[in-house]
Length: 149
Image (cartoon, rainbow, N blue to C red):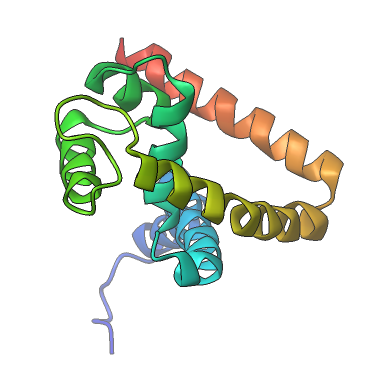
């Protein structure tokens, strides 16, 4: 039980912050959606973050660590750790940032599963709401990125 002298105004501010916090709401949504994709992708042996990295590598020509970190909004240390894991599975070339033939097959095999999982999200939200959400998420990232520098 809380002490009688606990600041009720401060408690109300905490409740408001918990309900409206951008970080908390975005992270909760990200965890739930990530879990949805990871569950769907389980048969492929890839997590959605790994598939995203494989696809980002494949569309770059050839990407650098800095390019990939920017594309994925990921710090270089985390990206390097993820690349090391994919290299250990022989999905990414050891000497450069490029998919191996095994990595290309893994990404190609996982893509239809990803597409179905993505369709479940967009169907549930509706195409217009999904597009509006994407626009707002891009704007949120840009506003924070702009302020950082």
